[in-house]
Length: 361
Image 1: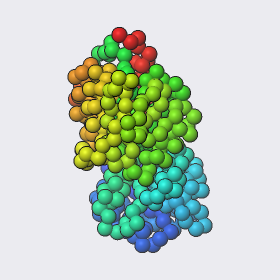
Image 2: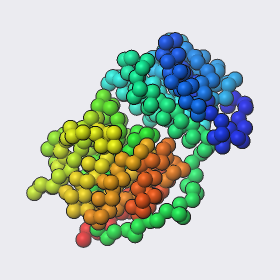
Image 3: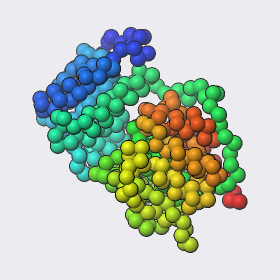
């Protein structure tokens, strides 16, 4: 049951995003609440110590976002997650996981079960500006998505300038994503199915602890196999190669085909891995025959790389604003006129399959 009290003005987003912080540590609850309350667009309306208390609070308080700890007494986060979503199907739940392999596995399992996203708690939350920025940014982004309501495929795209489809069949599918990316990647991979005639490379902004676990979860979908890319690894059709956390993934051509290279060059667009080096190198290695797919994400990482791909004869498809958590990365290439299509997330995989079936020149 959704708590009463939503108004049309609130639904339109004119009120602060209302957050419940659920953590069994009073120190963490206080620190997280102070970080969120410091932003005028956010209001912490409830602080609770376990999942059962969160369920009880949801019945009496209008809430947009729950920041949900995983390990708690009485009722843990994974037990509470489906119950919270059943009580309010539009609720956005952000899991707060530890920055460990086990924490990454649980957080990504939660995303597959309906959580909106995760934040990884450092060992010392108090005073950690990186954690604070990620937490506040995600709460505000999912708050806006909550207020928008269910995504609509009818969002106006007439003002976007779309490019004609190239007649060069792609040799590589290259995917970039950030905020909201794990959930979008799961949807995309399931839509692409079990076999493709080209390799797939992906860069998702994510810590090094999380990227091998993300690859495992993508493989568990039962579609194409996925693993972190390895230095010098040949890229085979029908397999997904994920950029490892804290390393840029580059694509090179050899006499035997495409190959992955890993780089510790400085971050680009404040990110490592970054989408831009992947796309720049792919454009050269494939002589432009790259199909770019840009999914939800904050910032403009991938804009320069997509421009290079398009200049060399490639194609690009972007997720639309209505279905993106943050229309930063896909919006940047769409508004720059670099896209052949701008589509709701569920429509992207069918479009990619259509483009990948083009006859090779």
